[in-house]
Image 1 (cartoon, rainbow, N blue to C red):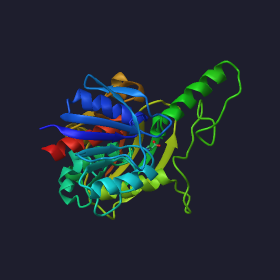
Image 2 (image 1 turned 180 degrees about the vertical axis):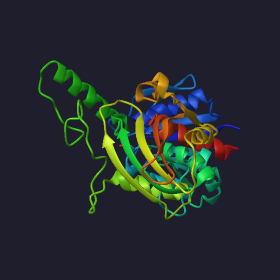
Image 3 (image 1 turned 120 degrees about the vertical axis):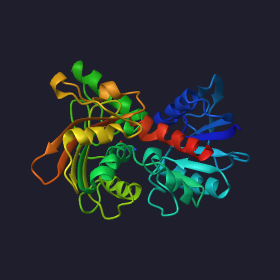
Image 4 (image 1 turned 135 degrees about the vertical axis):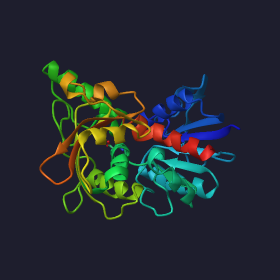
Length: 334
Ligand code: 2RA
């Protein structure tokens, strides 16, 4: 059987990655329609050997006969179209924060909690934020073998998490700086080239930024550990692609570094790449374009009882977004 699929936000960084992944994985597509805002409508994109002209998404767009919708646009698009399509019988796989914490919407990383798909009540499945997905992929095997008490995570997030305009901004600022020209700051509140911004998203009253709150809430929901102690500091770095995370875990029971590596290596979709003697550890440059979540620098943290440190790198456009969405669709088909 093949399906009628729509992609809302097809010309964005995640939308384009989705088309590549649908092609690579030979997803059973009968009909494909691509939508974007007025600005990018008319662009021609290809998938599975066919070319598609991107349609403008408007109130008048008709979705009759559509089986599956991937949405990766703005929160407003998800809010407006996600609920409407879900109620009309379309299976919606949504990449925004709009539905993630809705108790009637499963928040899914298939390798971690595919069973949650059975609790889909609104026709919508949410995919986690691109920092939460690699975090839970690394935490699940540790929880299963040694239990988890507390998690402290610091992220190093590439500009593609913000989208194509931010990637252009990093390149343009870098070119300007190396040719001693003035730098234009448009996407972020400060220059990102040759800099770090300890802000991802907007600040809330307590001083956490929205990305930090998402990591805490989503990790608890996916791991089904509503009172897990989690704290995050999220940092934007001048890297084009891949989010990295320094993770400190306090386990319930002792776990040697080698046993932690073995448990993580058994986790589907995760690769342990960890040989400090040979200076081998995951880096954004090497992990870009890869499907797996890479884990390295696994070591015991002697400063607390049952402490463990890890370094995790994942392609935010693939496992962090488009790939996870397509894997969910594959699970639903099965
Ligand atoms: C970011 N996590 O990197 C966001 C994208 N979903 O900005």
